[in-house]
Length: 355
Image 1 (cartoon, helix red, strand yellow):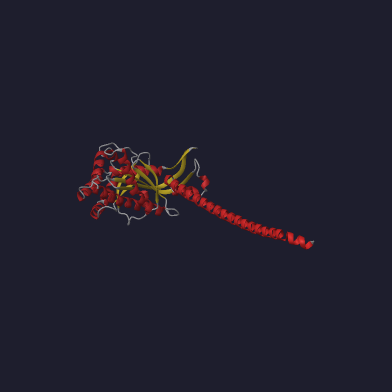
Image 2 (image 1 turned 30 degrees about the vertical axis):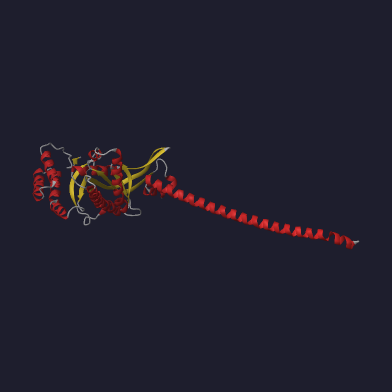
């Protein structure tokens, strides 16, 4: 009986056993496939996260670079030493810097001959060339004011002397860049441009001004006003580069940058007079030589003018004019002295000319 049952059900048992093993194989393969799928999904998720993080970092870098085009990194660095959270409305920080202004002479007449697009193309072409000499000498452009540029030289972790030297070298390099630019303009049948550069060294205040929803950075102080006024005098004295005595004294490099005394003036907005000099280092050697030959006579003439010794002042300026008849500076001083000696000077007159 038992043998009959075994023989009867044996194929069924074998079939069940085979199906059971097939099911196990399918199950194991399914589990293995699911595990592989999970690993691939995890790997893809990690790669996507990594790409997302890289993208976020790249976006942050691009935003930072764009931000620096509007707010110079050096400006932010002045506040960073107090913590970046201090870059808020009304924040102020003081430092000694060299301030340089450069302006295009006769810009109004030049711009009248251009349409709006030509004007923008010209300004951007000009600014592009002025940017490199400033940054090369560790300065940064604080702002563009029409066709003018205001640049600051703070030589990070440097001395006041280094800051002043940076500004003087930048002025020389800017003149070189202008000469090269005018060569390109001549090749394109465009008229040359002329610029005036003014530099002063002194304390300024870096600050943030505006409102809660519109904030801007600014640099203010008496030194900024002096630098701007000095640059404006370049047309009056027909000089390429005019710097204050404070700048030269701080740089302490008389042997390196040839210069000559221009005048003793009182600029607008300031009571204390300023002694100003013309930097001639970039000019033709013959021009430098003849200007330096008359430098002592001009200095003596100015000393006599301050003392109201008009006769001695005129004598020195006439002697200088004989040496260099084409020098507009000595002719200017002669005209001033001849005019002043006919006037009743106040008892407290300090010899400075109001300009």
